Length: 164
Image 1 (tube, rainbow, N blue to C red):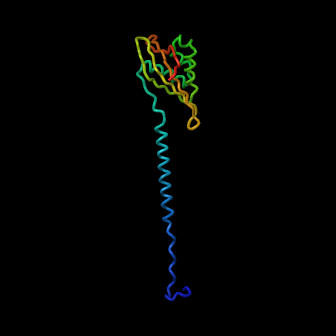
Image 2: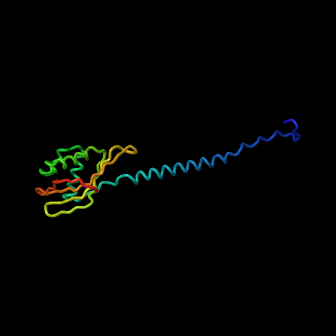
Image 3: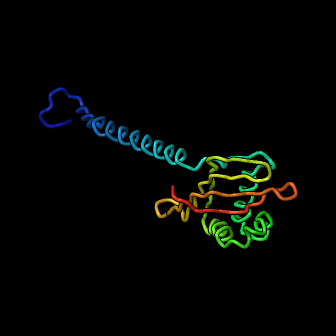
């Protein structure tokens, strides 16, 4: 019994202070953080390079894509089999193809093509990326690629770097 209490009953304990005022801001911050992380993750996935295009088997575009693929695998011998004798003599063809093997990723986009008999011309954009994330850098090359068909197989004959 507490002094001065005349009811004869023990005093009731005081209720704990309500914490609803603190809980609501924490929930809001947690939901906002989850939403921000979700949006950032979605943005990264959307900004990624699309899947490489596929080209019809036996086409000039497929031949060029095969050369670039071989260079990315650092298989210069396989790549050079797909370059004509004239193209192998031209340092620009070999040098630019080898540059693709220096990047961490190398993607090509064929913007247009013209075929006439056993010769074809491709308008190509090659993009090499070095590193990943915020420390990455990109080199873009705009090319006109001349191909010839030798014994039914397309080979790179000329490669010209040009402005945009």
